[in-house]
Length: 353
Image 1: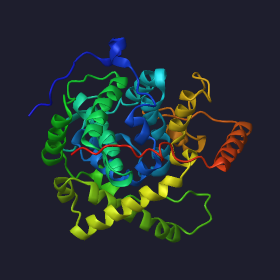
Image 2: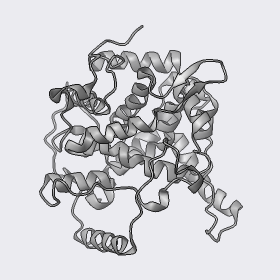
Image 3: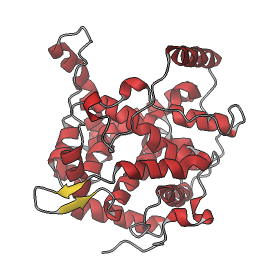
Image 4: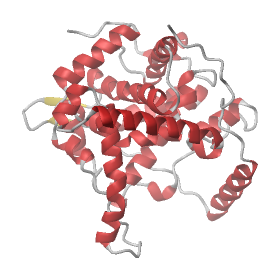
C-alpha cells in the first residue's frame, strides 16, 4: 500500500508551507522535555530497523565508538527544526545536508540513500511517535484531539526539511495505518538495530575507573532503557527484536510512568527542557533577542578529530572559557529560582469520550 500523497511541492518553495511551529504548539510542549530521553533505545532501535536507515548507520556511522557524544550533539539541530522559529528551515536544510552523502548498497544488494523520501520520512515519523508515546506514558496522556493536533504539527514540522511530502499520510488515521504496516511488513532486526539494543557505553580515556566497573555501572541504565523500549514497541516489532513483555510488565511501566509524571511537577524548566527548547521559550517571552545565537551542543560532544572534516557530522563551535563560565553562572542563578515546569498548573484538558 502506498502512503497517501499530500503534496509533492518542496515545502521551502512557498511561504505558506514554511511557517515554523511556535510556543502555542503541543510539539513545543513535549519534544524538548527531558523525559523523551527515557526512550533513547526505543527510537534508536526502531529507526535503525528500517532497512535503508539501518544500512546507512552500518556503513557511515560511528555510533558504537561514541554513542553518548553522537546523541548529545545530534539532538541540538534536531530540536532546532522545532524550536528555531524563522531559522527552522535553515536548520532543516542543515540536517538534510548531513545526509546527502549517506548512500550505498546494503548487504542484501539493495540500494539506499538517506535522502530517499520514504527513508527520511520514517526517521521523522519516529520522532513524532516519540512525542506521542512519551506524552502517553510519562506526561499524563493525550486526548484524541491532541493526537490529531500533533499529527498536523508533525506535517508542518516536516516541511522545515524541504523534502518531498509524497510519503506523508494525509490524516492521523492514515498515519496509524502507515505506522502499523511499516512495523509489520518493512522493519527488520539488522545489525544496526541490534547494536542499539545491546549498546555499550565506552569509557572515556581520562575517567579513572576500571573498565569492568564502568561497564557494570552502565548495565542497569541500558537494561532499563531496553525494558522501556520493549514496552513501547508495537507487538510486531517486539517479536522481531526477540523481546519479552508480560501484562505485569505493562502494569509496572504504567505505574513508573505515573510516578515520573508526578515527580516532574516540581522540575524547573532549566532541567526539564533541552537547551535549544529553553532558549526558544525565552526568545518567545522576550527574555532573549529574537536573533540571539542559537544554543549549540557543548564542544566536548564534537566528533573525533579524524571525522570532523566529513560532511555527515555536525561539529559544535568551540566556546571560550569565559563563555562557559558565564553560562554556568547564568544556569546556576536560574535554577536557584526553581521555576516550575511550564504548564504544570494547567488542568483544564478535556478528555475525548
